[in-house]
Length: 530
Ligand SMILES: [Cu+2]
Image (cartoon, rainbow, N blue to C red; front, side):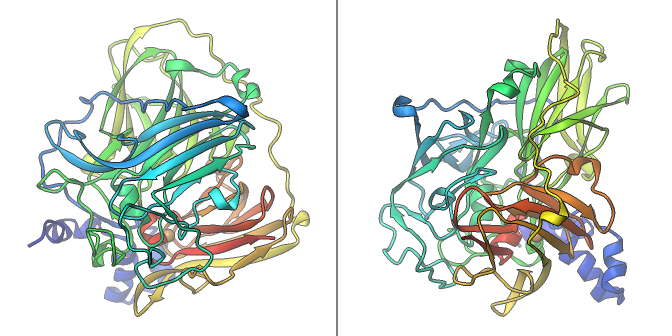
């Protein structure tokens, strides 16, 4: 019996989404609305690791290295990243092969300034084609990482546009071995992330390690006096599972990721791991001063949602003061005790350890997890310290103020399970992704309202533009919907209205579900800006 089959048996009760809500419907005859009203906390099935796992809060939190440019002349910062396989020690004493950017998982962080363009030359030394997308980037279409804009590795057959389903895209721009991606970064300061976006194989490529952070800053944000330097921590949260040989476990139908895309039965709704990594370390711990810190949180998990809570050793919850969303600073801070975060969402949060006794801990837990997946990481308050940082009451005044009356049209999209190529798929508006089909054509500068409706959890992401959340199931947005977003978490049975303006660049972009398994199994659509 394969390890994941055994895991399936053991985790059946935790399996939700199609295996849960929809399976529940089949088994009990419940109506869809009744099943969905149960609001399963998880969409996906959990793999169980086959190696011993370390205790929580022992491994130190790594901070990804900042990538040095190879050149800064001519007003452009130039970077080079080699995509290559390495073996790393993620779990103590366990050797794990990874696919990486520049040998590291997470990849190196790119630090950039608003309006200062960068060029990143990616070199593909992996065994399969790759595509790089800068998530949250306001990027010209030719550098946005359309899924068929493949970078072929050495020796890959010339019919490289074969995508696994035999789907040929005549508009795909394929390069051999390297590709230069240019990012103007004419956008609000924000935490972005770059990751693989290859047609049909995004989920396993990210799972194997192809993800890194990019931070955009500007003078106005620097002047706010927020915690900075070593008191600003990027936190990339991602779940993974480990096979008996130490490798990352993943239920790919084709483990070489060459031909046949997709995952096996119970994992169709999403692949979850039983190990929570932060910056690539399992349940890490970080020593902090008794002072304010700025946490820049990314959920880089394929399918796992979190509801984060910070709790001191004496059981006291700490405020999570949100100052930013996916696309940068809020207008004013929003205080949370519980912070939901869906795949690909980012939250910029101030946490104040000054009231926590020196020598004690603050644990970050996931209220949606159970057993070991309930823990995320911990902070150990090591020392008293002075703190001249601030959390200003006004953070920004440049957020778009689009109103419904500005919209030239309203579009409706359903995000639902369905049939695709004779098997199970995930569909937008009843259709699986087809690069050749025109789904949305919007004029440059036009404002639109989109109404999105979901069956199970679907974190919906638009390339190129940020948007604001107008409503959830006819009610006002939730507190964590504030600000400018590029990914919105649709909960089971929910409808969400967003408003955006399609500006920046013309060309072919995408919108899609950022449950990475859903994305690979059809849940993408074309967004053409003309
Ligand atoms: Cu989805």
